[in-house]
Image (cartoon, rainbow, N blue to C red):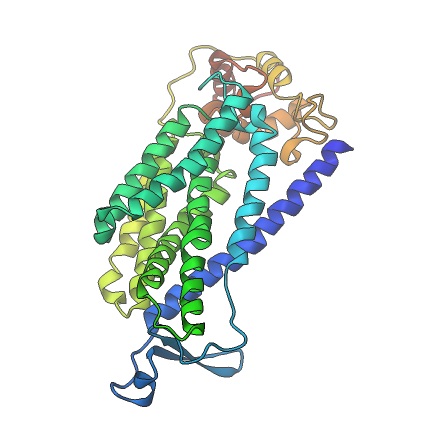
Length: 400
């Protein structure tokens, strides 16, 4: 009953995380698009003299919209001013709660892989939290360094630092644990940008305008800069959110490098759309085929190399014993593992027919990527994985 309730809590938090994340990313995409499509008003015209820096007309939902952006602030602050911040805050909060439930309370299952690093849950959690909040500190210092004056160099350095973080985390965590913490680093940077840079900058602008003072343009420029950084983080973060369904990524020996490559694909795609929003689609069009080729080059490189002929014939009795000893405690109608009250993803491995039916999943997740059993809690050996692979290669026959 307690486990079942916890799963419902996980579902609710994950759903909240998805809803608020969609709202946040949607707003981010829209406002970056809007900013890049603004047209300056006629010089010395009424709008230009009123301080309008750009304007845009759009049609949507059966009506026309006119949007204006002031260079600094309008002559008078309107009584109703819409702020965009709670989407970011609740996305981060729900994500952190979900991270805590799955990876910290369930550290032995999802976060720790003792074949990679034999560490205690307490140590793993401290490393995880340190990487998340340390990532923000390093990024913020980078933004305040001279590197920020050259966005291309800044982007390359930031990409290399995140890749280094992915490599380092992959040396202490399970593949899934490493991926989710890289995503948490980026998500924390994005949310902290909103909380500590973007909103304070906007608040300073509003307060100065209310006092009748000429606002300092620098906080607004910093906020715009951080908003653009957030825009480039979105697609890599979205990939990490779905990556847990694809063990051939995080379970690969070079999973950290795959993460870097696929994140680069996301950055290239995002950059193309940003160029397109500025009316530079032709100049940026080459980025799409580059991203396409890069993605499939990564996919091909990540594929398992052709396996050699089995060194011995493996009977079903041998394969069955391994599966029953190492897998069935979770994958049963009534799991004996205390962490589950139902078989994960509905996969059952109790009968010969079920074992043969799941041969592809067993080969991918247990033999090739070694992502199952989770955290290797049942201590499956490499020799046992090899025997299962040979049994499947020989046809996964259930006849002895």
